[in-house]
Amino acid sequence: MIALRVFTSVVVVLLGATATALAQGRGGGPPPTPRASAAIDLTGYWVSVITEDWQYRMMTPRKGDYGFVPMTPEARKIAEAWDSAADQAAGNQCKAFGAAAIMRVPGRLHITWQDDTTLKVETDAGSQTRLFSFGPRPTTLAAPSWQGVSTAQWERPPGPPNAPPSGGGLKVVTTNLRSGYLRWNGVPYSENAIVTEYFDVGALPGGGQVMVVTTVVEDPRYLFVPFILSSQFKKETDGAKWDPTPCSSTW
Image 1 (cartoon, rainbow, N blue to C red):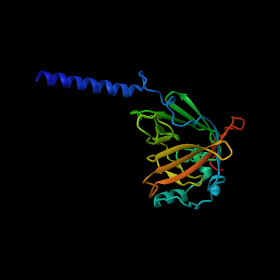
Image 2: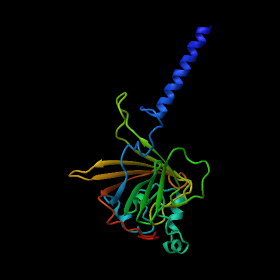
Image 3: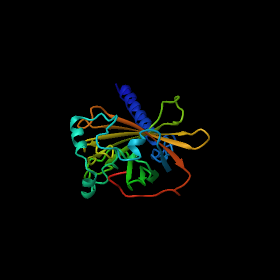
Image 4: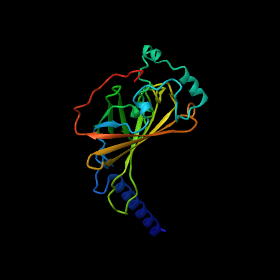
């Protein structure tokens, strides 16, 4: 019996030491920060590449043109009542610049690390700022906002055993949003929408980099099914063309 207890104690100690070592990383010490362990480098200046939906992204669509959006009857009713002048007068000119739609707005992104656990994404169109925080979602939330609360995590493909991780992308989930527009002509999303984004980076033929952002908007109130779009950005060498502008209720 004594021998069994000693054996059990040794196993528990070894398991605890193994768990601690895994939590601390291979070399001991604290685990690497999200910045140090980044799966891809998103930092720098990026410009929109408009390869589709030109009529919805480069101008304000006419009222009633809701092509390809799986809208509920309630959403259509709201969109039919859209009035850009009323939005402007009420100070709601940023309704099409919220997290559910901002990646579709033509313009530039400036991505930096605010600190070791927070990516900052600034847009010159609408002068918006998004913060992607690694770690658990905060339990206490501020008032809903255009950019909401975003939690991020690196995603990596499975690799050979004992090999260092390589490649992958970024997943971001955003909630706590103000209701806004998926398009400038009043196509709505509600304050209960959940926005999930996947960021990937690849090489361009002939040089350069492209970033692909896949956006999934889930909103049972205004969408029959999730609304999924993919947006492309090309990396620029510097911020020479960076041009912050305020939100507008039309484009």
